[in-house]
Length: 292
Ligand code: G1P
Image 1 (cartoon, rainbow, N blue to C red):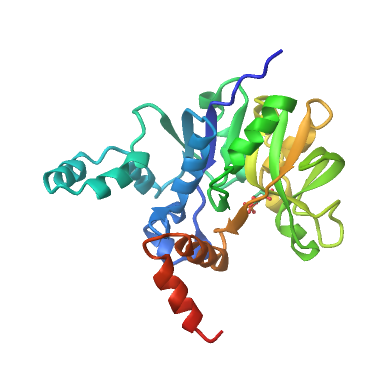
Image 2: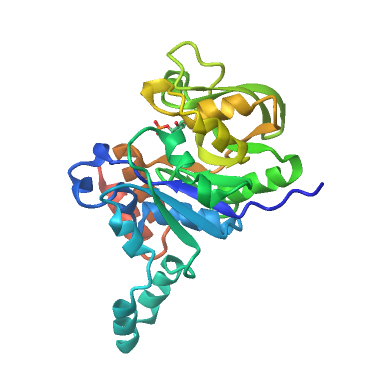
């Protein structure tokens, strides 16, 4: 049986962004820029590079700016056209997807990542789907993370998640894999545990916010079981599927920035700025002059 390509991606974007207050008082954290694009745009670009056609944003109150951003801003477009600002116009292309490709659903209570994903169930339907956590900026322009995962998925089917080895003292922050046999960068997943207490993690392989999942995970999530932090955890629902379906982890080989963290967000800005031909040289010169 051939494996059908994954066409739908879910983006949980309902979080309050309390770590970035006061900046996030009136601006969703996903709209904070990394250089000159909002954080969310990087995850959207990654999804599109993997062949995703339908995008589902699980939003919440106060996230209206996301809908504005992914709409056709006709006054702006006309004004730029009139003034011959073609370069600026080109930057808008990736923000204006065909009507109907993006759907919005509200998460009405902050009940956890699993709950956010479950809120998208009617739009996702009974097909395999991807989940991308935009806080995690996975930077690998030559081989975008979800595209690499999708290539593995096309071979092994089932469920595929992206992982990275983290320091032992950080395992309590993540969903951690209990690993089985490994074949290069692909590791069989024997178990998953959300935010294990220090010293109890089954490995240092942490889930870093990219998932290709089978629709049955929605059935597990429907039970609404609470896990770590009293929240409905995606990790727990995935753990229940292990043994019933193939489950693999692909180690990410690019550069990961945890943009849910202030330091990670600044690092992403600096690293991506340095890669830019227009501003990279100035930033590099300035960094060299800093006695740190
Ligand atoms: C979530 C997931 C966790 C994953 C992490 C990656 O946790 O629950 O399994 O490892 O994202 O960033 P959160 O960071 O929302 O607490």
